[in-house]
Amino acid sequence: MSATALRTAAAAVAAVVLIAAPFGLTAYGVYVLSLWAITTIAAIGLNLTFGYAGLVSLGQGAFVGIGAYVTALLTTRGWPFAAAYVLAFAACCAIGWGLGYPALRVRRPYLAFITLAFGTFVFLMFRNEEWLTGGMYGINRVPRPSVLGLSTAAPLGCYYFCLLNLIVASAAVWWLVRSPWGRALAALRENPLRAAALGVDTRRYAVMAFALGAGLGGVSGVLYAALLQYVDPTPFSLTMSVSLLLMVVMGGSGCFFGPFLGAAVAVVLPEGLRFAQNYYLFAYALAAIVLMAFCPTGLIGLGERLMTAFARPRAAAAKAPP
Amino acid sequence: MADVLQLLVAGLATGAVYALAAIGFTLLWQASQTINFAQGEFVMLPAFFVLFAMNALGLPFPAAILVGIATGVLVLGWLFKQAVVAPTIRHGALPLVISTIALGLLLKEGVKAFYGAEAQAFPPLGGAANVSIAGAIVSLQSLLVIAIAVAAVAALQAFLDHTRTGRSIQATAQNPGVARILGIPVERMILYTFLINAALTALAAILITPVYLANFTNGEWLGLYAFVAAIAGGLNMRGAIAGGLLLGFMDNLSAAYLSAAYRSALPLAILLAVVLFRPQGLLGRVEEPV
Image (cartoon, rainbow over all chains, first blue to last red; front, side):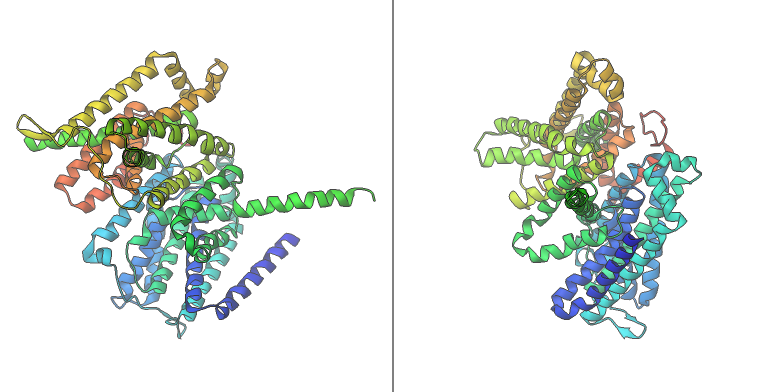
């Protein structure tokens, strides 16, 4: 009970900090924070797939790309932003379902290979189908939406729009993993055989987790297009899918706050380490390998381990007679 | 007819290289439950070892090839097993999957940061000579690639079937528990599998890099093709050969007769076709889903 209260309090404090943060930052700082919120949404989706369902997806970057391109293509042709938003989410969920359903018929690792092939295919489509996507030049002048009559054209407005999306998405996932659906998912991750024996349709749950994760990737892409107002193929390569996966793992997979921390390490930290820009991804990958070898539960797991290590001598000291 | 022959030779040459990478991938998966997502980077990196030996150490090309293969076996075989796989596999298969994915990124970014992002020319084994067979002009390089790959696979097959160590490796791949009871040093056999995989990928690198230039991003598509070949084949050695050759042939065919868009959809289309219509792969056996 106290742990839940602590977590709720921490979430409330974090929300207040995030709402107040832009006032101490430059326009660029606000942009980085917006990018962090957007990346976190994609990582939360992937955490649903990897952390809660135990499925490896190497295609989350492609779903972000699809969301971004759907938004750019539709809004520059005069469609309302809300329609693009809904369509991008639905399209990514549907594609996720279409890929996950056959892949999970066979073996769980096969989803990783199919999403890898899918991501490569999507990237090449963005680059080669110039009649639709503009090829390497991309699509310019993506309009920013106005939400409930409030414009998001200014950096601050756009940031709050991204933050609102992040809060809604995390609340939805928070509720989802505590629902009977989420509990079945956890059972599936802990012991697929037992879950199947208890009557959980393991494949359907796994596919749903993957499809929803893909949908959140799409939402992240919608916001990405709105934030940058420009979409080109370069960011949506395999590297994005891999670094999203590493974010989830670094933060702590299957842990609610893991993606927030992982995205911060991947998006905000490099801004402070500008001098090491060329070596950042190298160091990031190295850190992930070391973490997997010594603490697969990620930074949050590492933190918990350190806390118990510090708490134990103190507890022992308290127990000892004076 | 001449066109078909030309395509066949080119397809066999690239397919043979995919097969080498796919065989190594399959051996690792079977013998040590290591799904190596960095397999493509394992084919990308040895080419840079060779280039480094030539450009920085000033070695002639044949000596540089030997240095490249030896360094590959040491780094991508022994060091990979001891420093990455051994400490991670204690925690289960999933952390190791993540670790090899991260390793792929590490090698790619490492080459980009420490060697360079520009594509580098890589000398072919057979020069630029062409041979005329039945009216078709095929490059000597393609024929050499096919010959070397066939020799390598035949040697590996003979080693696995006709030596005591080779049969112990097969036993380890089939059932590590029983192999251990029979007194086979399972850990040592697994290490051998890693060394064989590294040797195969180093060889693949030397055979394919002259065609596509040495580039840090090569691992992305090389890995994908190796995975598709291994899975389409059915995760066994003969299947990996069949899958590799099929993929190489279809890749060259679609490049010649179809648009680039269809070509880029080939790996995805083959994977989906396999899981939908023949989940056990071309030459695989049916088993319970895991």
